[in-house]
Image (cartoon, rainbow, N blue to C red; front, side, top):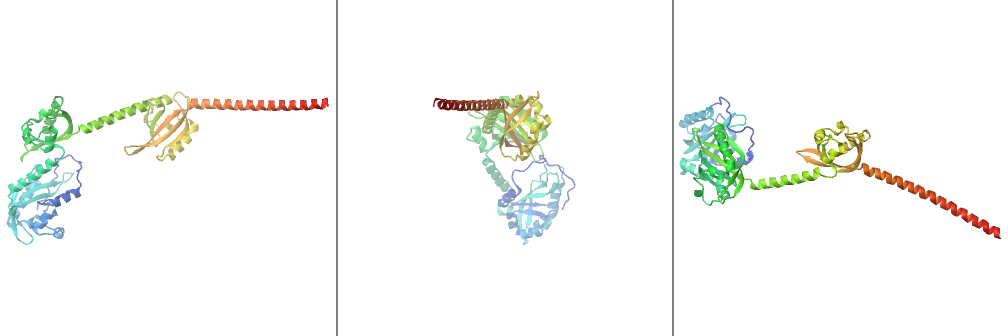
Amino acid sequence: MPKIKKNVKPNIKKGRKTSVSDSKIRNLLESITDMIFEADVNGNITHANRMTLRMFGYTQSDLRNGINILDIIVTNEADRIKASISKLINSEDLEEDLGLEEYTAQRADGSTFPITIHLNRIIDDTGQITGIRGIIFNADSGKSYKAALQISEEKLRFIVDSISDGIIVTDLEGKIVEVNNATLQKAGYTRKQEIIGQNAFEFIVQKDQQRFQQDIFDTIAKRDVQEKVEYTLWAVDGKKFDAEISSALLRDSEGNPTGFIGVVRDVTSRKKIESTLRSSEERLQAIVENAPDAIFIYDNDGNMTYGNRKAEELTGYSKIEFMGKNIFDMGIITEEYIPLVVEKLKQFRGIPGGPQEVELLNKSGRRILIEVTVFPIAKQGTGEVVGIARDVTERKRMEKELNEHRHNLETLIEERTKELTSTKEKLRRETTDSRKTQQ
């Protein structure tokens, strides 16, 4: 069997992850009634679905022991299939397609039957050709390759019509040649004949037409895929809706552009949700910015990531000055309170805490006593802390004055009480002495 002679860069975007797991794909292949197999570059079959094994009379055990493509093709046609595989693997044309080829297949028991086979290359993410994949149609069952293609097309049409996103196929001038049911429903049509033949440009609102045309030109020039570009579209009833369109260039067997295929997703609901969320965020931002207390956010190391207007007023620093700065490096915590703040940061384990009194030293050097309450938030997988600080300097001053007044009042009352007690005792003695004198 042929060997790989070089790497080939696949015509896909490197690193793109498939949305369906390998196990799900395997399960899907097992349920298909057509024969599907994969082989390495030496022709050793590495996977075959149930239908393939059953039609050729092999078992999974036989597959593990080793089956080569040449084992399932009659001897006098072996050279032809080897030549086809060699051409497929060594071709410099990324779009190389051998089309459908007819062979005489050979079962494990030696019996034969006619087949039609389609082969293509398996290319990994690094651009390395790792093998071939084949689809086999049993011509002996009464299906010619044209009938097989028709059945495959019917299956494909059923799948396309079952997709919730709109799918549109056009020629190079934008004339619509095929659509699925989802496109009809969203555009407001009931039959495909009503939309086929119209130009796709007519469904793009005027403000987006020039951009849409430029995107189409870019797709042709780059022979690439335009992914998730937003446009505003018209429906047949004159209503507009927002859509996200991914488009790709269609080519014939020789690689010449023949048209476009586009996947259209209605994002009107998503845009409304995004707008609602954006409005909510703006309202929340306005509330936070104008809150009477200072609100700031810092990470577990004490690095500031946000502060509202009251935080600016309290510290004397602007957002630009304290964003990204460490609270200890800024020197806004007085020396007496630094050990307490450090200990509180160590103790913090994502549990709300406070209120805790801390003394700040603002930019002008004024000492400010604040009362801080903290609680955790999660942001993109990292932990942060929200602190709400209230200036209690004036309150503490008033409390101190009140305590002093209370103390002074209590002292005054105590002194007056002693004076009254002394006066009362003196009066009692004088009265007693007067009575004795009278007697």
